[in-house]
Image (cartoon, rainbow, N blue to C red; front, side, top):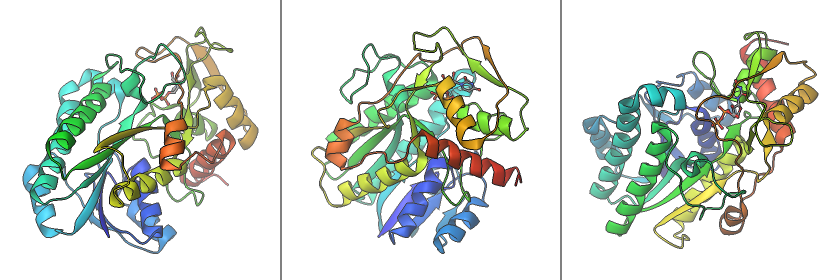
Length: 340
Ligand code: UDP
């Protein structure tokens, strides 16, 4: 069974490709390598013994997308990861985000219609909720206005899927709303590879511990949480990858209850920045150089998932805890920083 994985050399994409290959799916990857490296393909091969087909191009190029589907008429489903995801950059350069994240989705849906392909799993995000009034957030929690153009592309992406699956009987989709994906594959052969200075907390923690950054700034210590730092729901990327395969099979087996479904993917545990730092120090044995600084503009104070719908409907729940997340992220960082 042939599955197209867009963004398959990226962070979540590569972990999902490993799961798919381990379960004997045939995988075609399209990635423009704007935020990943071709060497990820070698790592995938080392883990699974299998080499996915790889195409390097931008999914905004509708001609190339059409050629791909003409060449691979037997694609059964698409897992669509490819997107730009830096919140700050999206504020600076909104058109890049609207073009990149929406044109690619539209091009894919158009080809699904042309080639009678039925199934799409879409990368969404808890950013669609903004700062919710009530926690934890369920899938029914109303969306607040997006905090950034990036967040808006995820809200609009879901709307495009809702409208398209309503209008075209044969197309069905599942949007997976990720909370905060962290950690790395147990082999430490794949993991998060941020380009330049990391925006995200965990790569910044591990790079600081590895001596590549001098100090971690903890953004905000006056939030309404028990220690004053912001709260998130961190989820292991390997658990997330499992959920993609389950969502894919739900579509392939036509088990979905409506043509467009959406699920929260988190652990359900809210964890503050300071708790995350402490857990990292505990599992790594490294004392982290950090300071408390001002809030980062655009950050929500706290968010964590109600996962009961995903648990019940998908039969999925996160298995790995914060200790596993920090330990695997550190193992990965040590390998790429060549620390023994
Ligand atoms: N954070 C921090 N220092 C950093 C990076 C992030 O204190 O160098 C905080 C950030 O303010 C937020 C949490 O860590 O409260 C998670 O941020 P991240 O960027 O990883 O994910 P987000 O929830 O913003 O998507």
